[in-house]
Amino acid sequence: MKTITGSARCQTYDKREDVFKAVRKAVRLAGGLPDVKGKKVLIKPNLLSDAAPERAVTTHPQIIWAVAKLVQDAGGIVTIADSPGAGILYTPRTLHKVYSKCGIEEVAKELGITLDYDVGFKECNFPEGVVMKHFTVINQAYNADVIISVCKLKTHMFAHFSGAVKNTFGVIPGLDKPVFHSRFPDFTDFAEMLVDLNELVKPDFVVMDAIVGMEGNGPQGGSPKNVGYVLASKSVYGLDISAQTLISMPPESIATTIAALRRGLIEEVEVRGDEIVPVADFVPPSTYRQEVVHESWQKRNIYRRLQRVGKDIYSPSPVIDPKRCVGCGQCVRICPVKAAHISQGKASFNLTNCIRCYCCHDMSQYDAIIMRRPIVGEIIHSIIK
Ligand code: SF4
Ligand code: SF4
Image (cartoon, rainbow, N blue to C red):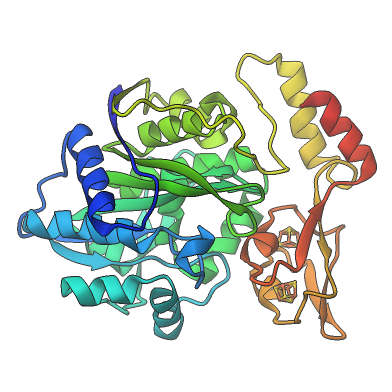
């Protein structure tokens, strides 16, 4: 299946007019929005946590404003919703905090959108799922006629890459998310689950905020990186392939893309508009290596075994920075296998039980968790990467 990615360059969020023009151009080049007239349209940004827009953790409000305006101009009835990251309680109070800090309340006020603080969810059977045949999905996604994903270009310690496919994980209510990590501790399986979820939810259109992305140890602990693009597509898989190319992470090295390619959900991507010039110095997460498809099965097998069986000597482990840890307990609530504890006001980790899902690192807002590979693991990693 061939898909089209619309590409428009845009260097900063400073001028709303410029951002709007870039979003409009990318959307048009991707074939235009689906028919939204008179329909309930869910705009689903990446609102991982209550982080200020300049930290590049969440979709920038200027992009959300532009997409919402396009939908309204086309006659759609807009709702903006997301369930924040793993382990964050999905309550009206939390949503209010996240929407306020991420600039969503302002966007909604300006465009006359009533923010929906409904925290209900629906159980959805999905017999076609390859690894997951049942999901719990937030009401706003379940009730929408049209879903437009408005994702953020980021790295991810566990998934390596966070774009359109990963953004859909936000339709799972907060405390249900860690359960998926304990059920699918290997990211290859987790990626299959994400593709199942995307096939159930089927976002109708996707716009990516790649003006400033996140490099390094994302999705929360990395650094903002100017990338300078807005991308759009009717396919979450096609858009991710374009974005992975943009940040010099080969699509064949990303598990969600490998799963989508293998299932025949995507074959070819055509980019229309501004040429995608790969950012050569984009820093991947420390857990990443290019597990390209043409590697011998022996090498890939060694790597997988190292990740599973040799986690104690190979995979980065969470280590606490006692000066930064405030003992808030967020990592304890998030950990899917109860490997995190608070003792004498500071977090500590039972590395025997730890499955290296990196949820604690992803969601700690105090930069108090460092992911450190043992020296032996560093040597092995430098040999096989
Ligand atoms: S490590 Fe981070 S999340 Fe865990 S208790 Fe300390 S500050 Fe809170
Ligand atoms: S302690 Fe280990 S298993 Fe628990 S959240 Fe952190 S990385 Fe995941």
